[in-house]
Each structure stands twice: as C-alpha cells, then as structure tokens.
Amino acid sequence: MAEKRNFALRDAEGNETHVFAGTAPRQAALKAATRGFTEIRLREKGTKKVHVFRGERKQIPRPKKAPVWMPKEIWKPSVKKICIEKLEEI
Image (cartoon, rainbow, N blue to C red; front, top):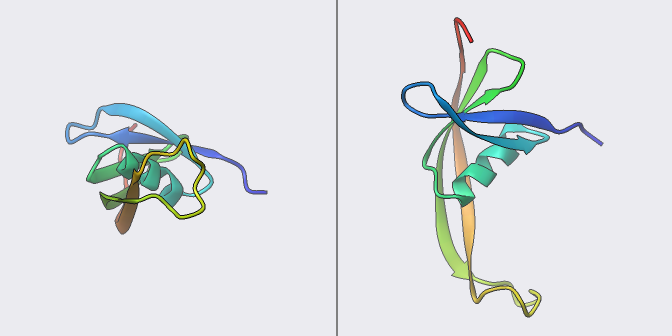
C-alpha cells in the first residue's frame, strides 16, 4: 500500500492555509474541491513542488445503494491538473 503524503493548500499570496493528506496529489486535490476550492495549488510537504489543479464540485443525487443516513444530495468533486511548478525557496 502506498504511503500517505501531506499537501499544503496555498492561497494567492503563498500562505499555506489547509493541509490535505493522500497517496497522490490528485486525491488531495479532490478533497480540496469537495470543500469548495476552485484554484487549487498544493505544495507537497518536504519538497519544492507545487501541483496546480482547477477544481469544481456539483450536487448530484445520492447513489441508489447509499446508506439511509446519507443526504439526498451529495457533492461530487472533479479536478483537472494544470501543471507542476517548482518553488525557489520555502
């Protein structure tokens, strides 16, 4: 099983506001998109790589085999990778 990595969400000024964990950058980006972020810039902790994604979320009806406690409408995230940037300094 692949190890979880931490990705810090960066805002336009370069401040790291949230941390998302996942085995791949896309998994962390999907978590950020679920919470409503659209311009997603994730710095992989311990590296100088910034993964840039564009994200969105849509409300869809819950699956037919969903548990009873699940709401009737759920958020479905989608992301598209734009590029990987390298930071000069951290």
